[in-house]
Image 1 (cartoon, rainbow, N blue to C red):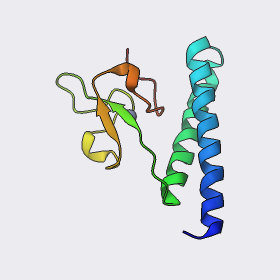
Image 2 (image 1 turned 120 degrees about the horizontal axis):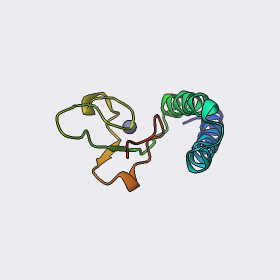
Image 3 (image 1 turned 60 degrees about the vertical axis):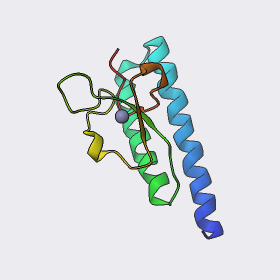
Image 4 (image 1 turned 120 degrees about the vertical axis):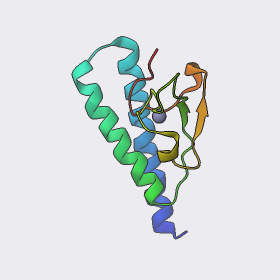
Length: 103
Ligand SMILES: [Zn+2]
């Protein structure tokens, strides 16, 4: 990996972590509900950017409940998820920020 890419990856990870913190704050306080979609969009964009640069992100998704095949956190089938991602039945361990985990 070239130095340039490494630097870009570092920046992308920092931006991504800032989105995670902001989304967490908004989810906790319930404030700025109108902004949270925008934040999740930003998170999705930077998540893709980190992966594009060759960085791995370990994300834990909620297992699809009951009859549906879609994850409650990001409405995707397990087949659509990146191979490095994990799944859990414990909602407290879900780190996917694409959408709020169904409670
Ligand atoms: Zn998910």
